[in-house]
Amino acid sequence: MKKLQSISANAHRRVADAKRRGLLANMSKTFVKCTDCDNRAEQYDHRSYAKPLEVEPVCNGCNKKRGPAIEIRALGTNHVR
Image (cartoon, rainbow, N blue to C red):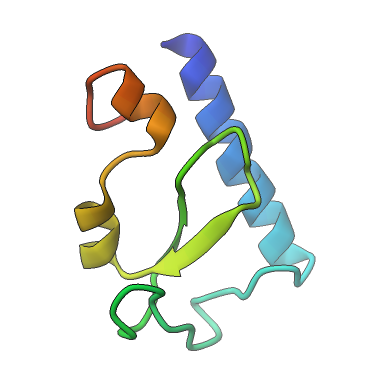
């Protein structure tokens, strides 16, 4: 589980760095549509933490509907502890 926490944290750090560098939109400053429903996106969703910059902007509701990243689903849980 610790390794998954490390992979997850690394992916989130990489996204934060990409936002700081202007490679990804900072959604607190820029309106970005949710990939799934066209509402305002509030976060970037990782389908796989092994691909830290392959993310999609989603609203909280759609992120919840999408469920956890594949590494977490493989463990049979809904979140990283």
